Length: 162
Image 1: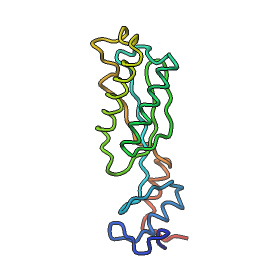
Image 2: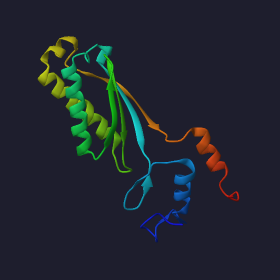
Image 3: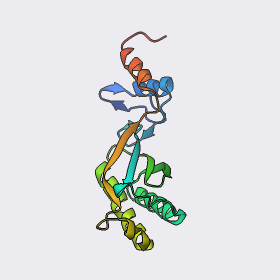
Image 4: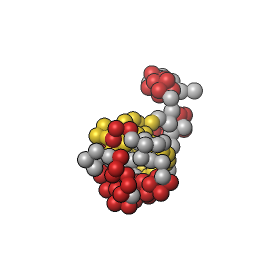
């Protein structure tokens, strides 16, 4: 069995069958590059510096979301969801294997901070030295399957399939 439309494809010396089998048995929602098949989703959380309640104005929230969408297009990133609370935001996005995560995150932080402060100068009163975002952030990969399911799949490698 091969990936549809790629009869000659191979990954790490194995035919693409392993990936197709993984896709069909574990329910992965796969993306495809020229030489790769992947599923890369991330959960990113960024807090306002000193947890200031700066994300309460709907205009600021809309500007943040707009900036994130614009930056994501530049980096060829697909935004799956963005939600805010008063002092932080959550971003779930899909990337590709060559995405430079630190550059993407720094662009999100820098450009969104600049635009929010430019369009909403009143937020500067909440900030110290013009710093909108905290230096630290949370980033995790998100799975489309549970860790237990993936472990079982790996453990079953080489066993006869029914």
